Length: 75
Image 1 (spheres, rainbow, N blue to C red):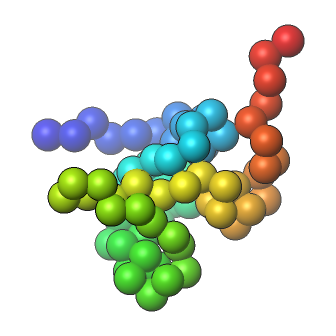
Image 2: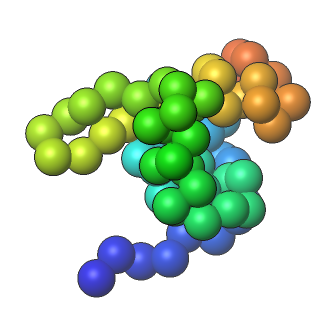
């Protein structure tokens, strides 16, 4: 069983990684996974097929969520 990801952890992953699975995007956007897969099928959210799953580039998600395009740098 997959662990449930918190909203905060999902946003951190979207900010720090280049690609994430749909469940992370769903948690970051506070919607269900089915909604994310539907948006992928409709072409609203781009996705890259990897094996049996899909990965979503984080840049379009950052733009949708009005997050910075660049990942924050540690000082």
